[in-house]
Image (cartoon, rainbow, N blue to C red):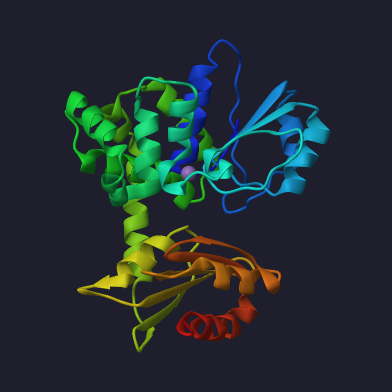
Length: 320
Ligand SMILES: [Mn+2]
């Protein structure tokens, strides 16, 4: 199972491993931040009859290359919008043109597709991807029931998604892969998972780093705030969220993280009604890797091109 490094991806891998417990299953996440997998790395781990890609939008060429190299059967479980690929089984209701809101997580796709009894990983995937917004979905009845039966609060589960996500936020790739085994070991036992010392230390470290990186200076003009920082951790969305809310909501928050060891920067743009298409299209036309959803756009580009991109981005967003 090749899976995304976030809680939904980790939980989806755990659900698949549990469903397939009669056969040996290995789980694998790409290098954190890279939406591609080197085929050689898969081959090094063994020979596989079947490969499942979960909650991870790999490029078409990458998927075809994996299939060609490994000769395995390939199946994709996802809820992101993706293109059709010949000879690849694609279990993705979003892709069938249904309303995206109906499928808030890959764990929910698996839950429905495999007709499972509601379990902790399914709930964690929903909360990991949706956070507070999950309360507005129809699945929240199920989440509520799960919490009532286990004597859990929403905050408990939100905290647990933070703990699980801490692995990728500190760029601990093997920690991400190990988290799948932890979910399997403590199936439906969130209290034990919440005590995991390593994850708790990660969260503490991340909190301190976020506070440190929140320090000014930043540029705040006409409701647009621009903050540039340099952290080795994946905290850009956390920093953006904190800056978006300071009593009043800012129209647009742009956070830039310059990779402390490389030549790339990551830009994260957050705005309440931000439409991603124009910005993502503009970024891709420059050859940058970019993605987004309503309210959020992320771009990776060379450090030296950050300033030019931001001034154009602000202009594009304003022209509405
Ligand atoms: Mn997801």
